Image (cartoon, rainbow, N blue to C red; front, side, top):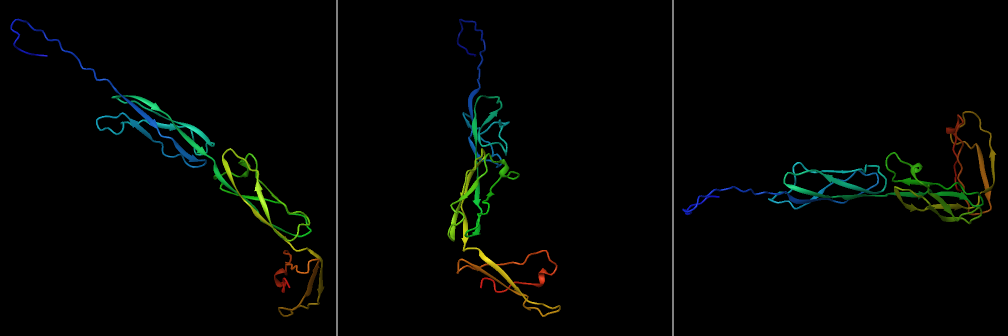
Length: 239
């Protein structure tokens, strides 16, 4: 301080001080979401209380979470830390929520002849995280059907259900069980004598079958594993 006009006084000036305190600043970590098996999203923060046209701090606060790409479904803290020369910082943590990954479970299509035992029912999975399989489920899905030994011919549903997992949810897709007309009750082959070097198309035998269902048709195949398998074919299938 300084001044004049005080002729009757001898003035001594003592300087004072202006203390500039740090401004309060709140840094809030934004909540994030991801699906199990996906990379972590970018972690971000929001500032509340910056002044003088400032938009961020230098150096920027560190933002971390314990969650990794294959961390189990659930919630995890996201925290920020750091210091600033001109601010007293209050940090507010955020949450990373990891949701279960959708797994498609398809009941495999099956078929059989009426009057025969059901084949084993199976399911197929689509959507596992790389490196994982049904072995990583708590409970594997199963398939069921109303088809029994003598169910009439027709198409029937196969239902998948029952899977459980900490990291997967399930989308079940039904399959089709096709029951064909009654199986052949007899199969016979009337052979013919075929001499060496006969022309292609020479009849080697006549295959016939019968069934309790007069509308039934059947398809036959030659057994692999014989050297001359490729020289023969069955014609007239389904007639």
